[in-house]
Image: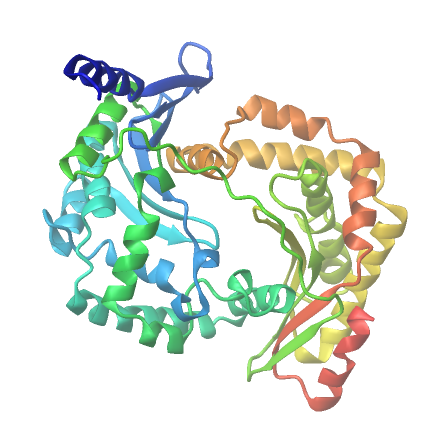
Length: 459
């Protein structure tokens, strides 16, 4: 039997262990660019980056849930839930939520991806406490009422229809299906008309409770902010909602695992009466944790990342076969994609595909020149810095880094890593990625003979 004194000692010891833990992850000069992390009892992480020279702040909450966490029957639930968290809480109506930020000239929005969801607000630094209270209230106190589910269903179906009307956007969903098949990564983030119509308030509510536990969340805030004040305000908001229930809970680890893609050489075509044919030619890429991602970033930039890139020069500048042509990479926790997109007249689709395939094969076999690699590194470094010139971009960087990698890298370290990429590293990753047999996705008004020839591009 345990004595009363032993019980008290055990309780005191437990409470002592359940204190907030704060770390300085990146130490900036004179406090500028300093990144700190506090892990609260209950497993909630709060990460901030201080930038005293601005008068704004962006506050966001990242949830460790995306469309890849859905079963086939739940496809679209993550995105549906993103909409519903704006529809009202125990403390605020939907109008109260939007009016609170409008009244101070703030911006509020959210986005859903395949592996995470983010809700954020950008405000004047003096209005940050309001933004924290509203966004935290949305994440912890959403009602998810039957009537709101019914109303928002119509808005989501319209969003799906809007996407379907944009084949330049829709073809990327098709490419994901071509590469991943009918599994979570291959299904659209928005869901389908059938799955959205089948979702009920009860199923979405259970999904919400399962995935919006504090251990699955990362709070990120950047701008003219004080880390300790942000932590106190976030903790007060979550305590008010009774969300930090288990003081011994720990944050979940970043995603891991390994996923195999479908067999190469697949072709998927959706016939549609459009003015252009929209194509994506691609192959498996790299997981976001793969150290070769830096070399792949340089390769992608040189191949199709700007006006001086090979694809832009060969397809648009020299031949005028397309207005938009580019390459891109998508990195997930355990796999990735590399793709080349082009939009062109249907009569030109085979010429465009042949040029793109020839360029991929040539770079795979012979690599890029040193000049191309140096130019790509310079472009990548510059665009990285320019892309981080506002507090929203900074919030995205630290929030995603914490959620997906569990660590932070300073901008200087990122730039140094890009500069350290060698021509041999780029050529090696080019052989590995571009040397694989590609797959192809096409949306457009192709005739039977044109469609039959599409397999030539992946032969």
